[in-house]
Image (cartoon, helix red, strand yellow):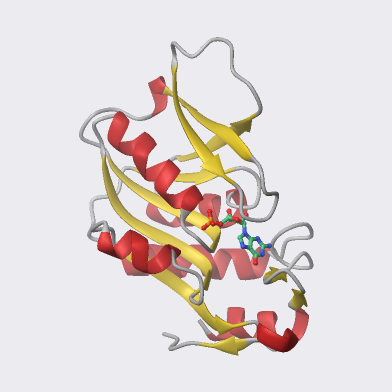
Length: 192
Ligand code: 5GP
């Protein structure tokens, strides 16, 4: 996606830890026009998949997620990240290790928002090792629903998340793919 690629080139900052900082348009300040285009693009790619819900994780997945849900005409659910849980009766819970924060947290979704048989599109801002996407997929499957696909805004293709998810049978569609962040340089992989 050209617009997104240009934004990454102009505003992305490579941190030494292999993290791409995009807090001027995605992770802190958000660019609504770009998010609308992201939503349109995911909607175009996944239309015809019979999607009934979009599922993301707080907080940076919410902007691309809500725009995608708006375009598809379905609700957005965002999984919550919680440190420790006491009551777990009414919620689905999965453990997810955070690549950027280096901590494991519980992610939760209320049982009332995913019904058996639903077709759920997972959307997230970044894909690195795939922990967040796998956690979300396990929640969908716990609910007896199916994962229609995984839409990623920025995939770091030098980390194994994309291939791990595809090997597990999921369709992964990334709007830009980054092949390397070595030496502070952003190198793009094949891009559609
Ligand atoms: P994964 O779970 O695939 O290992 O990592 C994806 C999650 O970690 C995303 O939800 C995102 O919040 C965060 N993340 C991973 N890599 C990056 C990165 O390079 N930059 C930013 N801003 N977030 C990242």
